[in-house]
Length: 154
Image (cartoon, rainbow, N blue to C red; front, top):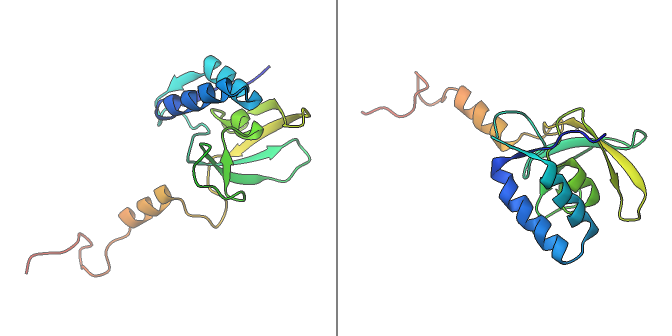
């Protein structure tokens, strides 16, 4: 049985558009993504943590493979293979909308069956996300000002 899929409301329209375009071009991954969107629940972003576009996901393909951490992106966005994962790749389509701990079966491009497991939604060790950087800056007092509140009138 497949796990539930929850799509962030801010991602749903973009994902649906990509899936429909892929369906028209007879892309088998597009068909899989479209079927996942059809059964998905659309949620508000802060409600529950799920795999989202433009965010980190750490996952394992099959139980015997190493962990991978990537940022899930739309096709056509600037990508680096070691950093980004297209939502129109078989594993990218399988990951979208899953929660940590979820396991999703999918077919690779070669037709071989795999299972992907979501391990974490945090950036990998040593990587500071934009959200983490903003939080750290907001919590740190400004060294140039005694009360840490910013510039004062002279």
